[in-house]
Image (cartoon, rainbow, N blue to C red; front, side, top):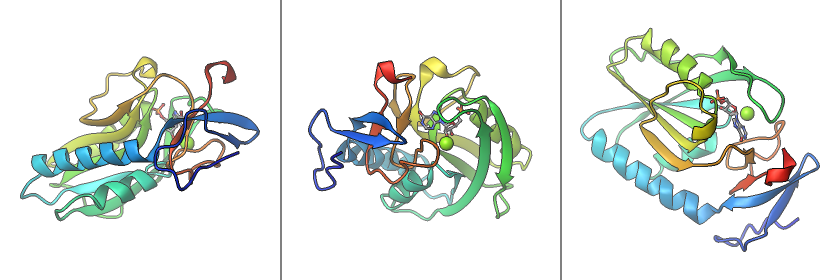
Amino acid sequence: MDRNKDNLVSPPGNTVVVNGEVFELFIDRETIHRRIRELAGAIMADYSGRFPVFVCVLKGGFIFLADLVREMDMDCEIDFIRIASYGDAKQSSGLVTLEKDVSGDISGRHVIIVEDIVDTGRSVEFITELIMKRNPLSLKFLTLLHKPESTEVDVRLDYVGFKIPSRFVIGYGLDYAQKGRNLPAIYILPRNGT
Ligand code: IMP
Ligand code: MG
């Protein structure tokens, strides 16, 4: 196992083993950070002169949010929700429950939801319903990763970092049975691994 922590662009074939399964490097740190700078620029342009509230979806979104807001030269508020979507470790069931609500009042606010990944789209659907009940002034979705081929519901994603194939990924906040979140890049399960 070679995490290659000091290499910004890791060599191809770099792998990690998490919970006994081998994952391959998929999006390296430099590529992630370059894209985050672009997303931050787009959001700053769209929200110029406003004071949006970023609502990070725990747990997976925490690293993405932390890196994103440090690229933003504007006032913004940070809040968190936590939802649980049930399923086995590699497949989401689409059954979503709220485990922790936002702590601030978001009525009349420009809300930007920050997700790690959109898979079936059920979490986005659930969060949309939840947030819209509080009458925000606007609501937009930002996700680092999107698996369009797995998305079953009609979701509007306003900012997407990377569209990826419908394969299981870990790292940069994303877990496999609670492990792998601290990997600095995104790793993917090879096609024959699912
Ligand atoms: P949804 O199916 O769009 O509702 O996504 C539900 C949740 O499943 C996401 O927020 C992630 O926590 C998790 N998830 C979906 N795909 C992956 C993956 O490839 N790796 C790790 N977690 C994932
Ligand atoms: Mg998860």
